[in-house]
Length: 574
Image 1 (cartoon, rainbow, N blue to C red):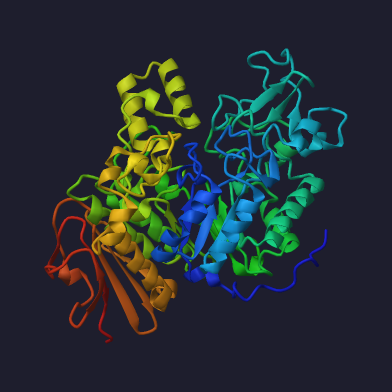
Image 2: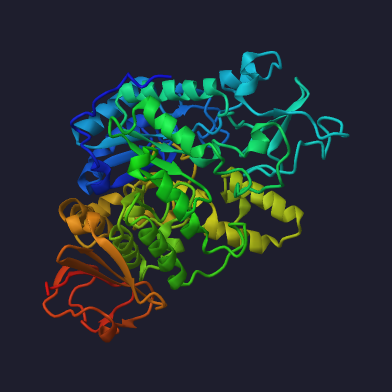
C-alpha cells in the first residue's frame, strides 16, 4: 500500500477547522421527499440547504445513501460506489456536494465498513468455499458434535444486535458467517489486507469526488479478538459488543486507514462511532500525534437511563449522573484528543423528550437549555435533524405504529419471555429509534411539508405547532437559539478552546460550569428541571460586573432560575 495519491489539503479545509465547526446530521429517508414517493431523497436535501445555511452549521453528516437492500435502513451496503435509487443518483449526490460547498457547507459521508450487505458482490463470491474472497468474511464450521443448521450448532453463543445469534447458517456451503447486526449484514474480515485495501480505495474514490470526511459506523468492531480472528471460540456476548469490540489491531488499522487515504493530510473530518469506548481509548485514538481519528462518539451518557445492559430496561436519570459523565469526558480529553458532543441522533429518541420536558409549557425552554449546556462544552457539537426545532417523540401507542427492526424484534422477544404488553409499549414509547426517524416538520401543511405522497413513517401530529416555517419567523424560537449558539462558537475562542470546570456536581437541578481561556471566563448557569431553582451564590464565582451573553428568559432574577432557564455570562476580569 502507498500513500502518494494525496499530498496537500484544500484551502477550504485549514488545519483543525473542525474544532470550531458544528455538524448537522441528515437522515435522508426522513428529511425531505422531492418526488412524492413518501421517502426522503438527495434532491430533497438539496432543496433544503438554505435552511441549514440560515441555521449556520458548517458540515452535513449524511447517513447512508449507498445502494442497499435496506434491511437496516441503508446500513447494509451492496455497492459502496453507487447511490440507491430510493434516494437518487450519483449525479444528484454531486449536485448536493456542489450546492453545499457553494454555501460554505462541507459534507461528510457515513462509512459503514465493519460489515456489508449479504448482497454485496464481495459476499456473494465469498459464499463459494473455493473463492479467494472466502477469507474476506468470517466463516466457521458448526459446533463440534452438532448438525450444521440445527439449533445450538452455531460456532459459539454470541448474540447479534438484531438477531438471537451472531452466526448465520449458509446452506450452500454448510458453514456459518459472522453477522453482528442482522443476518443481512455479514462482518468483513479486516485481518485480510485485501479487504483493507479495497476499503481504502473506495474511500479515496469518495474523497476524489469531493467529500470532506467520514463518520465511521461501529469502527471499533473492525479489529476482532485474536481468538475469533484465528477461528477459535469466543465467550458469549451481547448486543453491546463487549466481547468483540476494541480488538488488538484497532489502532494499527485506524492509523493505516488514515495514512493510506490521506485523512489527516487533507484535513478531512473523521469521527468514529465506538460502542463501549472508554475515555482512555478515546484519548488514545484521537491523540493528534497518533494520526488515527479526530474524535469519537461515546455511548456512556446515552446508557445512563437504563437499569441493565438493555436499553429497554428503563430507569430515571439523575442530573448529577449525566453532568458527571460528560465532565469525565471533558477532563479526560482536556489535554489530548477531542470530544464529540451530542444528545440525540438517528439511533436515539428525541433529546427534549428524553432529557428535557416536552410538555407544551416547557418544551421550548428545555430544548434551548439542553442545547446551551451541550454547545458550551468543549468539543464538536452535532445537531440531529429537527433538534433545532425542538421536535419531540411521537405518540405511538401500539406495536403497529412502529417500523424499526430493533423495536419490532424487542417486542417479539419480550412477548415470548412473558413481558406485559403495557410494559413493552412503555419502553418503546421512551426509547424506540422510530422517534428520531419521523419526518422533519417543515410547515403546518399536509405531512408537515415532507412529502406530497404518503410518508414512509407518519409525521408527528404536533407538526401543526412545531415546524421550521413557524420557527424561522419567531425570534424566540428554539431555531433562533440554536442560531445564536452556533454563531457564538464561531466567534468566541473561549467556547472553542476554553478549559472546562464543572461546579455544583451534586446539585439535582442546576448544571453549572465554567469555560476559561487566559483571563476570560464564561459561566453557564442552567436549571435542568421543571421547577424553579435558587442559585447558591456563595458557591459560585462572583457575578459582579458579569455580562450576559445569551439567555433563554428575559428579565432574569439574579438569585434564581425559572424552570428550564439558562444563562451564559462573561465574568468580569479580576
